[in-house]
Length: 101
Image (cartoon, rainbow, N blue to C red):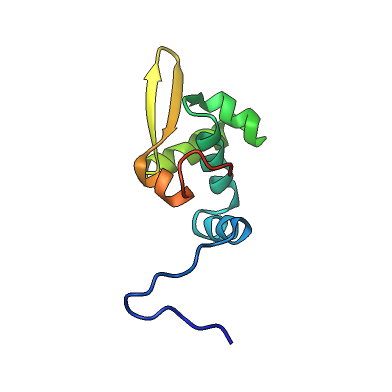
């Protein structure tokens, strides 16, 4: 039987697979994939995210909009391109900065 964490106790670290399942459950599988793509490719455009995640550009745009509204990513328009980066909250949700997701 597994003990639960009591007051003042920190839960043990999550394994990579457990963390991925939890993220998928919280955000939805596609949105979690988009968030990971932004983490792996800082300053990526919506088109690059679309290609990397194999979703339609409109779908990538929708998911990045929701992630931005949730404070998980930031977006900057440069000319005709829109570039995305993880916000501090997104980094925190994904775990340690620089980790391979």
